[in-house]
Amino acid sequence: MPARNRHFHRHEPFQHDHRVTLERAEGPVGWFNPTRAHFLYPIRSQEKEGTDKPHESDDSIHDSNQNLERGPEPTQPAKSVRLLWRSRDNRKGRHALLVQKPGPGEEAPFLAPRRTSDPREVLKNIKRTFTYYPFWDISWLVAFIFTWGSVVWVLNGFFAWLPLEAPSTEFPTEILYGGGITAFIGAIIFFETGSILLIFEAINANNTGCFGWAVDQLIDEEHERRHKLRLVASQRHCRHHHQNRHNFVGKGAEGGGPGVGLEEEKSAQEQHWQWFPSWHDLHTHYIHELGFIAGMAQLFGATVFGVSGFTALPGINNHLTPQSALNGAYWIPQVIGGSGFIVSSTLYLLETQQTWYKPAFHILGWHIAFWNLIGAVGFTLCGALGMAYGNSGAQYQASLATFWGSWAFLIGSYLQLYESLDKHPVEETTKTDLEPKQ
Image (cartoon, rainbow, N blue to C red):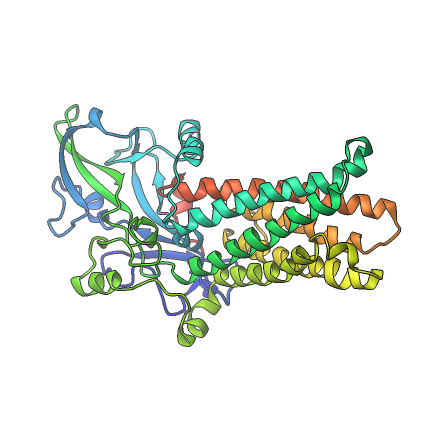
């Protein structure tokens, strides 16, 4: 295991479950906590020993009395399974499963859900983004707020850029009122609110580890009634607060993972929502979390950017003279706030990568951070070019940067909404991927 990934600072996932084995941990930056870790699934001994009956102490295994053909969800055979812990997934209440498909002639003792990148699964989750509204889930709420905020900014982009591109379409006070009011709503209500919730999401992440899966024991009628194990999504084995429908700022979902003692489970259930981390937690744990640092950069950027949102209002913006006053109260806060968004998006991007220089194209969170980074660059350019007073080309490009930057934010926000509803991602892997890296 590389030296930079040797340990977690203070909190290691599944540290109270002695039957779960950490295979390796990885992260893009050595000083921060690992952002990705592979754990052997607790039923691995049955897979290796070839026993027909599961261990009695493993409460994640249940008798289903069903044949293989009667599973409630489409399944695929799997040679082995791993828990894939990622810091971003953990904040979002997601439980990733790493599945290794069997080769020709190899035994497949597991049945796993089909991969979430399957077109049928993608279409199913897209439908959920328009029909399912889990307002008690803070990760969904963050994505929902940012999505509607981005819609407002797209309208702002039209108000700012379209009159310059097609002057015949402009109506009186379009830029002053249409652009100013939408900038205020987008910056103050949506950006600031969403950024505050990002911090709450980060400081209330489940740091003990969360399974989120149960195992059904099935009988394979075609192969001498051998037992097979089917993995199914299970809220019973999840402690993330995202599952709690009863109160937004309260206890996590009841129940612990297999192998967790009564004391640990009781302690986990008694952990309430926290509004502020303790100083000890802050300097021993959260300061080493890329997600928390990225959220703080986002909140800083949104707060400073909010100044330009306020000064964009009619009655304020049109009275900011001379140009130096307009620059100081309107354009410069956009540059500083946009720079904060760039730092935040870059850190979120790094969080999803195994190394700082290798993009993670296969991870949805990477694409979310990438599009948000494009949007942040657009908003920063808008402020920088807007200060070029009297230069019509610069003013045009400033408005255009707001337009394409808003669309980039909208793409990233909708992908985040999609991500928040996909709580049980399944990824396929090869044998090489499961081997420890030197």
